[in-house]
Amino acid sequence: MAAALALLAVAVAALCCGPAAAALPRLEHYSAKNDGSLSLLVVGDWGRQGTHNQSRVAEQMGRIGEKLDIDFVISTGDNFYDNGLKGVNDRAFEESFTDIYTAQSLQKPWYLVLGNHDYRGDVLAQLSPVLRKTDSRFICMRSFIVKAAEIVDFFFVDTTPFEKKYWTHPGKHHYDWRGVAPRGKYIANLLKDLDEAMKQSTARWKIVVGHHTMRSVSDHGDTKELLKLLLPVLEENGADFYINGHDHCLEHISSRDSPIQYFTSGGGSKAWRGVFQPNKDKLRFFYDGQGFMSLQLNQDQAQFIFYDVSGNILYKWTSSNTGHPQPSTNLDDEE
Image (tube, rainbow, N blue to C red; front, side, top):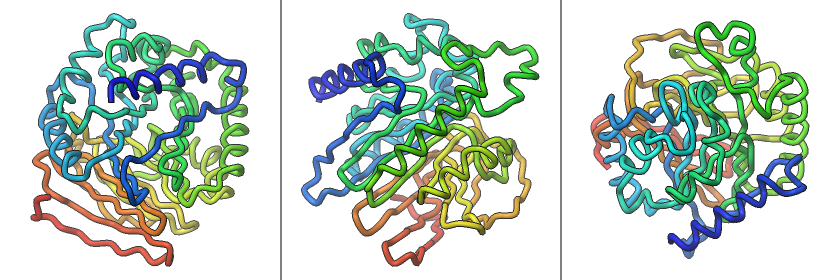
């Protein structure tokens, strides 16, 4: 496994630095399962040196990860609180990542996007291949594509630059816009590259991953810039699911205007905001607490499960080729 991850790290570095860097970098992840299915965990908003129940969530992720024989982990951003990393030698990397997610089942690739808190630190450090020498699992880029098990394309999107308030009203915070400014050009190029990549995709499932909420009933609510700029690209290109963090909760919202399903997995550590603000879409599930999500995929079916900090199943939802979702809620079961 270590050798495989090392080779993957080399491939990532080449993609980031090569002449094709203008397009979205592409990675391939091959499933080790004989049936070609895929299993993974999704967690967001976690990096707090194990505090605020981060360690407890990590422990349960390890247990569920072993049970599901996961292929990899997705992080929806805000990987290091409160202000990202200070540099490639920042001890917070080990204290919030390597020393926390120690279960054998979690020794798989981690594909990560940046969150707004990550942008408050040294972004180039978090994107640096140097971190992969410390922990080869850590694969973080601004925007990229992972083709997995020949059935799904994951489109990871850098959503922080979309939010105009970070540029115009940063308050006491400093955002590291190196490689991003000017905002308008960066976003235009990103949307163009994403649109082209999604149009070229022949995968059975198209899943978009970002940090910021598209639709949410919690503290941050809907992100208007994403609804205006990013959502049309997803709708036009047949995205099945949008997965995000940012709000420190677990939720599933169905669009009333398109087949897109919105999943928030941002309960990796500090949670319990106590905020509920309905929007116009259909709320299927909301849990204002800590936890994480699993996703199991094959050619015919996608199953999402939310777990709480104790590993209890909170909610299941399945989407199949027939187009008929099959939701179920289980508040007391333990996986």
